[in-house]
Length: 136
Image 1 (tube, rainbow, N blue to C red):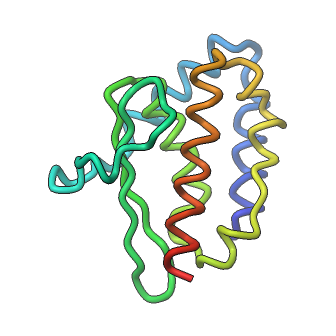
Image 2 (cartoon, helix red, strand yellow):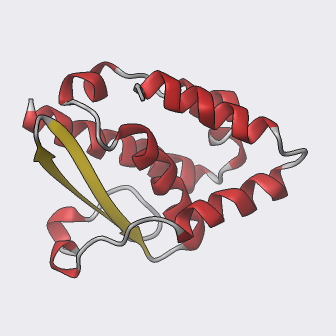
Protein backbone atom coordinates (compact mmCIF):
# COMPACT_ATOMS: atom_id res chain seq x y z
CA UNK A 1 0.00 0.00 0.00
CA UNK A 2 1.08 3.56 -0.60
CA UNK A 3 1.46 6.10 2.21
CA UNK A 4 -1.63 7.92 0.94
CA UNK A 5 -3.70 4.70 0.96
CA UNK A 6 -2.59 3.84 4.49
CA UNK A 7 -3.48 7.34 5.68
CA UNK A 8 -6.93 7.05 4.10
CA UNK A 9 -7.42 3.69 5.82
CA UNK A 10 -6.55 5.26 9.19
CA UNK A 11 -8.96 8.16 8.60
CA UNK A 12 -11.71 5.61 7.83
CA UNK A 13 -10.92 3.63 11.00
CA UNK A 14 -11.04 6.74 13.20
CA UNK A 15 -14.35 7.85 11.66
CA UNK A 16 -15.98 4.78 13.25
CA UNK A 17 -15.46 6.20 16.75
CA UNK A 18 -18.00 8.58 18.25
CA UNK A 19 -15.78 10.35 20.75
CA UNK A 20 -12.17 10.95 21.68
CA UNK A 21 -12.15 8.55 24.62
CA UNK A 22 -12.78 5.72 22.15
CA UNK A 23 -10.07 7.07 19.84
CA UNK A 24 -7.57 7.24 22.71
CA UNK A 25 -8.40 3.63 23.60
CA UNK A 26 -7.81 2.63 19.98
CA UNK A 27 -4.47 4.45 19.89
CA UNK A 28 -3.44 2.67 23.10
CA UNK A 29 -4.41 -0.68 21.55
CA UNK A 30 -2.26 0.14 18.53
CA UNK A 31 0.65 0.75 20.89
CA UNK A 32 0.24 -2.71 22.37
CA UNK A 33 0.69 -4.21 18.89
CA UNK A 34 3.88 -2.23 18.16
CA UNK A 35 6.78 -4.57 17.41
CA UNK A 36 9.22 -3.85 20.23
CA UNK A 37 12.54 -2.29 19.31
CA UNK A 38 15.54 -4.52 20.00
CA UNK A 39 17.08 -3.51 23.33
CA UNK A 40 20.43 -2.80 21.63
CA UNK A 41 18.71 0.17 19.89
CA UNK A 42 17.35 1.69 23.11
CA UNK A 43 20.22 4.17 23.19
CA UNK A 44 20.58 7.91 23.69
CA UNK A 45 21.24 8.26 19.94
CA UNK A 46 17.84 6.75 19.15
CA UNK A 47 15.88 8.84 21.67
CA UNK A 48 13.62 11.40 20.04
CA UNK A 49 14.40 14.85 21.37
CA UNK A 50 11.32 16.96 22.07
CA UNK A 51 9.08 14.23 23.46
CA UNK A 52 7.69 14.47 26.97
CA UNK A 53 8.14 10.72 27.42
CA UNK A 54 11.00 8.57 26.22
CA UNK A 55 10.61 7.41 22.62
CA UNK A 56 13.26 5.37 20.86
CA UNK A 57 13.24 5.07 17.08
CA UNK A 58 15.50 2.90 14.96
CA UNK A 59 15.51 2.58 11.18
CA UNK A 60 17.05 0.13 8.74
CA UNK A 61 17.17 0.10 4.97
CA UNK A 62 16.24 -3.25 3.43
CA UNK A 63 15.82 -3.80 -0.30
CA UNK A 64 15.32 -0.09 -0.92
CA UNK A 65 12.70 0.41 1.79
CA UNK A 66 12.97 1.95 5.24
CA UNK A 67 11.81 -0.16 8.18
CA UNK A 68 11.29 1.43 11.57
CA UNK A 69 11.08 -0.06 15.04
CA UNK A 70 10.24 1.92 18.12
CA UNK A 71 9.22 1.87 21.77
CA UNK A 72 8.09 4.34 24.40
CA UNK A 73 7.75 4.36 28.16
CA UNK A 74 4.28 5.93 27.85
CA UNK A 75 1.33 3.90 26.57
CA UNK A 76 -0.38 6.70 24.60
CA UNK A 77 2.90 7.80 23.04
CA UNK A 78 3.59 4.21 22.08
CA UNK A 79 0.26 4.19 20.24
CA UNK A 80 1.06 7.44 18.45
CA UNK A 81 4.42 6.17 17.20
CA UNK A 82 2.73 2.88 16.18
CA UNK A 83 0.32 4.91 14.06
CA UNK A 84 3.20 6.79 12.42
CA UNK A 85 5.19 3.63 11.76
CA UNK A 86 2.15 2.03 10.16
CA UNK A 87 2.17 4.91 7.67
CA UNK A 88 5.91 5.25 7.04
CA UNK A 89 7.56 1.86 7.64
CA UNK A 90 8.15 -0.38 4.61
CA UNK A 91 8.20 2.61 2.24
CA UNK A 92 10.96 4.08 0.09
CA UNK A 93 12.96 7.06 1.32
CA UNK A 94 11.62 9.17 -1.55
CA UNK A 95 7.99 8.36 -0.68
CA UNK A 96 8.58 9.14 3.02
CA UNK A 97 10.27 12.46 2.25
CA UNK A 98 7.55 13.73 -0.08
CA UNK A 99 4.64 12.45 2.03
CA UNK A 100 2.46 14.78 4.01
CA UNK A 101 0.74 13.80 7.22
CA UNK A 102 -2.79 14.98 6.38
CA UNK A 103 -4.31 12.08 8.32
CA UNK A 104 -3.18 13.65 11.61
CA UNK A 105 -5.33 16.72 10.95
CA UNK A 106 -8.18 14.70 9.47
CA UNK A 107 -8.53 12.50 12.54
CA UNK A 108 -8.03 15.52 14.83
CA UNK A 109 -5.09 13.98 16.65
CA UNK A 110 -2.91 17.05 17.10
CA UNK A 111 -5.74 19.18 18.50
CA UNK A 112 -6.62 16.47 21.05
CA UNK A 113 -3.10 16.18 22.44
CA UNK A 114 -1.55 18.27 25.17
CA UNK A 115 0.91 20.87 23.81
CA UNK A 116 3.90 18.80 24.97
CA UNK A 117 2.54 15.64 23.30
CA UNK A 118 1.75 17.62 20.12
CA UNK A 119 5.39 18.82 20.10
CA UNK A 120 6.47 15.22 20.58
CA UNK A 121 4.37 14.17 17.58
CA UNK A 122 6.12 16.76 15.42
CA UNK A 123 9.51 15.55 16.73
CA UNK A 124 8.61 11.94 15.86
CA UNK A 125 7.72 12.89 12.29
CA UNK A 126 10.95 14.91 11.94
CA UNK A 127 13.05 11.96 13.13
CA UNK A 128 11.24 9.56 10.77
CA UNK A 129 11.96 11.91 7.87
CA UNK A 130 15.59 12.44 8.97
CA UNK A 131 16.18 8.69 8.79
CA UNK A 132 14.60 8.62 5.32
CA UNK A 133 16.84 11.51 4.25
CA UNK A 134 19.92 9.68 5.55
CA UNK A 135 18.99 6.62 3.48
CA UNK A 136 18.19 8.54 0.28
